[in-house]
Length: 254
Image (spheres, rainbow, N blue to C red):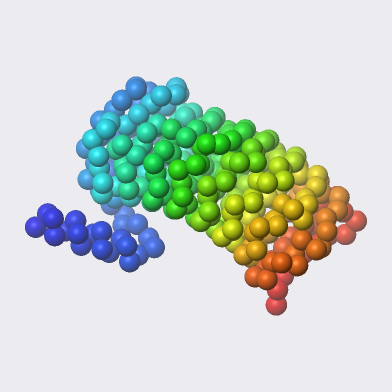
C-alpha cells in the first residue's frame, strides 16, 4: 500500500505545476552534519535554524520524495548547506529568501540536475561567479533580486541553457561583462532594473533571440542602440525609463 501511494503522489506531481502542501519542519543548527527523517514533499527550516559557518551538510541518507526545500526569513542563516544532493537528490524548487546569505558556491548546488527554480532574493550576496550554478542544467527560474551584487563573472551563467527567467533587480551592478548572457538561448525575461548600470550594448543580448520582457528602468544608462531589438521577434515589453537618457523609452507590443 505504501508503494502504491508513493507512485500515486509522484504521478500527480509530474502532472501539476504546484507542489503539494505537505511539509516537514526541522531545525538546521550550526553543526557539520545533522540527520533528518524526511518523508514529505517539502523540507522547511524553522525559526531555530542557524548556519553561520561554511561546510555545513545534511546527512547522507537519501530522501527521494522531497522535491522542495525552504529556508526563508531567517537572518541566522548566513550560508547554505553543502552537498544537498546526497540528502535530497530530486529537488525541483530551492527557496532561500530573506536570509543573510553572504556567498554561494558549487558545493551548495552540486548535482542538483533536476532543479527548476532557485530563489535567493533578499540576501547579502555581493559577487556571482562560476562554478556556482554549473550543475543546474534544468534551471528555468533564477531569482537574485534585492542583494548587494556588484560583479557577475562572464561565465557565471554559461551552463544555464534552459533558463527562461533571470531576475537581478535592486542590486549594485555598474557594468556587465559582454558575454554574461551568451549561453542563455532560452531566456524570455530579464530584470535588471534598480541597479547602477551606466551602459548596455547590442552585444549583451545578441544570442537571446527569444526575449519577451526586458526590465532596465532606474539605472544610469545614458544611451543605447535601438538595433539591439531587431533580432528579438518575440519581444513584448521593454522599459528603459528613469535612466540618464534625454527621454524615457518604454515599448509595449499591442
